[in-house]
Length: 301
Image (cartoon, rainbow, N blue to C red; front, top):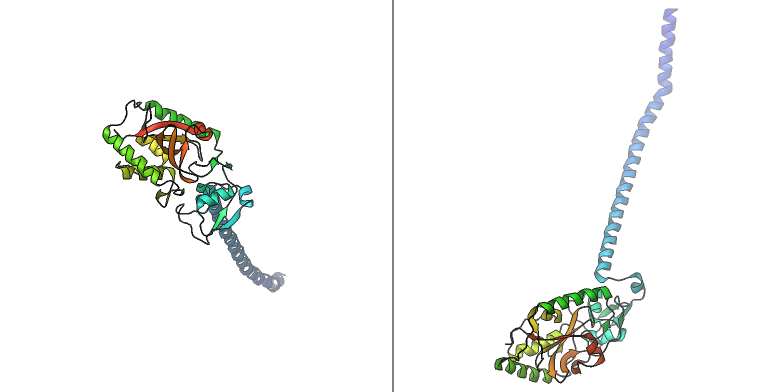
């Protein structure tokens, strides 16, 4: 019985090996297939991950551009393109579409406001700041309906600056008066010169560029700055302004001190405004509403 059982067990083992050996080979093949499948799945996952990264980077770039230009979906939807024609300036284009020069510069990432050329395509969007038609003469060509909160903050800064200044109650010295006289003579020779955002030469002026050019050529050594910087850093309030002193305005095309001119006396001042260098009246409704103060350059003694 024992040898027979042993033979039967051996036979069963051999039979089992015959029966199950294909299964062993199949399992090995499945392992290979599974490995390939896993490799493919891993590749798909990596591809999707890279694609997602690409989409993520694209989204970041898009969001970055959106933040830079501060455009809403409504603005983008209402965008148009404009082809620059002969004789165009950004001021003219801004007026045409009732937006500000600064917005056009920002939307199109222009290096400066005087760097446009015939045939250039500009993107124009609905104004992000609610620009409305402004009074001729404000320093950007349009009046902006700026945020009330922002204006309030700027008002506090203006008040704080004026409060810490020691009021000038005397007239300039003979030397200062001579500079003033020459400055007014120079300023009047440029009546009619067109407004140019960022302009500080007779080819075109903006408000602070005009003031700097006039005073520098009249003998006062001053740096090129914005109206706000001149107000906050380089001037002092005067009790009784004389021809040649400065006049400042706020909340025209942006919150805060945003425009300036040279006082001529009798309530008039000369400045680079919407229609170029012109003479306006401080008591006019628009200017009276935006008036801040009469001041004097610290270099005038």
